[in-house]
Image 1 (cartoon, rainbow, N blue to C red):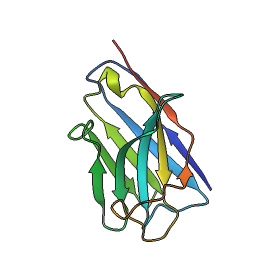
Image 2 (tube, one colour):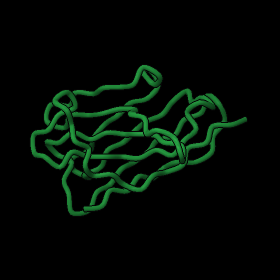
Image 3 (tube, helix red, strand yellow):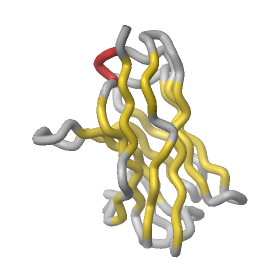
Image 4 (cartoon, rainbow, N blue to C red):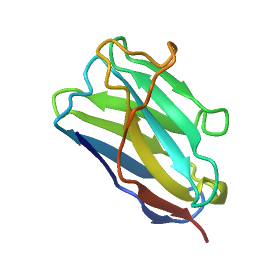
Length: 124
């Protein structure tokens, strides 16, 4: 199983990016999928989660109203639309998934599959 995040880049404050997560050897459908961020040497922080079974979405307080997580089951992709970006959003972003069928964001997701990250830099 491999997860791969892409879509990062450098933007000015107030700008937008859309991150994409793809998977090989794994289907996102009916599982919990999340986005995390991490600065090397620091703690990994949870950003958002979507329960694919019912489409429920959850966000860290720091990104509520600015970020939107979504799933395209036909393409087996999960997106993180990032709007109104701030310098504090700068980090490496990772997607992750709970391998268990029927897993959800509110039932202690394992997030045992992590992909390679994509760098997001917000700077003027």
